[in-house]
Amino acid sequence: MSITRHNWTKEEIIELYNQPLMDLLYRAATVHREYHDPNVVQVSTLLSIKTGGCPEDCGYCPQAARYHTDIEGNDLMSVQQVKAQALRAKSSGSSRVCMGAAWRNVKDGPEFDQVLEMVRSINKLDMEVCCTLGMLTETQAKRLAEAGLYAYNHNLDTSEEYYKEVISTRGYEDRLKTIENVRKTNVTVCSGGIIGMGESTEDRAGMLVALASLNPQPESVPINALVAVEGTPMEDEKPVEIWEMIRMVATTRIVMPQTQVRLSAGRTQMSREGQAMCFFAGANSIFAGDKLLTTPNPDVNEDMKMFEMLGLIPQKPFTKVSQPQTVEAEESQYQPLGEKPKWSRPAHKIERNLKASGKK
Ligand code: SF4
Image 1 (tube, rainbow, N blue to C red):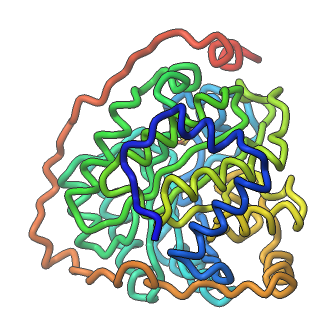
Image 2 (cartoon, rainbow, N blue to C red):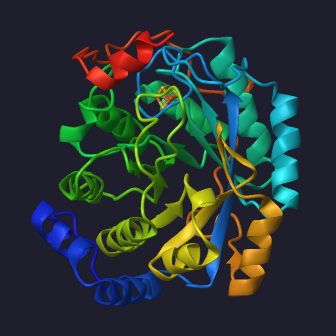
């Protein structure tokens, strides 16, 4: 068995990433087969439960209020709406629902209580529940865990160095702190990044060093290809080449052998052959549904045809970690503390973000 190492260096990862493709694929596929069934791929559904109007300035994101995009904002969905969508996702083969809210951080109050109810209702449908709600305190993480949350997503996005070129409204250490808070519970960690934002191979390797050095490593690592949306600071970035995506997936698989590697945003630009190579290289999850938060995604029927063609089987829920218990709100042992943590606000200047904010 390949051992799980937490001391990968950037140089080692760059060497892995740049080796001849056939060697890289062979090694990644070998590691993949040691820990995973290569014919099983998880289908997850991403639901945007609160869209747009976000105060952050992530350079890739059409939901940031300061950029001028065509995104239609929506207030927090109701528990009934979310439950109905989760049931639909389950009937089309999803075993996991990830709920995303465009918030800087979680705030105690009625909206967070509503999200906790959503978590309870989806866990009761016997589906894995994941949330991505921004920065989180330890008590908030514990309240989510108690409601039955299976995973919390908080992406590192890129290397610590390049992060400063993408976001100025929070720092890398805030991301790591939230992940640390989640780790104080039984909730699993989902954290990955985006390629195609103008970063270098060193930055891609730097992000993998940061993720692989977490102990334990994240149970789930989404690899996204930037979907350049008009109006955002990254609207002119060139699409990622399929070979870069395959190399990134394969390298991630080698440095994090036990992790679920998720082929995330950018699949509409990939051929079936390209996606098949990503699965061979170690990707074992996709997001289903025609939207990924706000960007386009392949139709679920198309995905099911691809599964049939490749002989892939959708993964059952709770295959890797058992189902959490749900504690009802009235039996909760945690009180909302109304905490006001001091998340950082570096506020350095990022020219392309400023330019996009100032557009009419
Ligand atoms: S990625 Fe998340 S935090 Fe950043 S602007 Fe978009 S919704 Fe806000």
